[in-house]
Length: 173
Figure 1 (tube, rainbow, N blue to C red):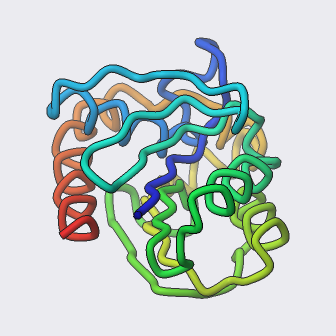
Figure 2 (cartoon, rainbow, N blue to C red):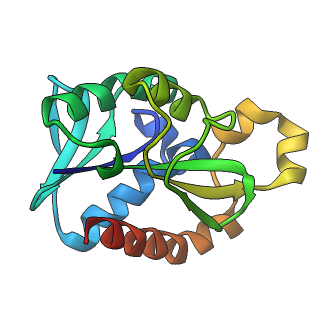
């Protein structure tokens, strides 16, 4: 069994915000695979399944995603190297992807929650660059990550999301 998790915040007000990049990536993936999301209260997540891979969007808020991930991971006995996290990272150039097999939270509260909840930092994570340093400096970190993508950034999203989908397919294979 494998588990692919997109980080984000529940609720329409967070659609197309930088912190919801993980949700956006999985929504795009579900759309190209023509799959609808289900919901499970047991794991506090929206999910779908393709073969032996589960895809989840935790319905906790970003800083508490680890609870949902740990519950899902433990119930299905998913190994750490079979868990892929997709999250935003404002320290990486916009649109760049960085895949690592393990590592620290690096200031990402969702990764921090996950590491605390599953007891290790040894799991793959795909960080999606959302950097826009001039905007971030103007409005601050919190408003930046909870802010919507600019129009020019939104124009680039389909290309970025296709690249993320390819990385997901590689992980599943």
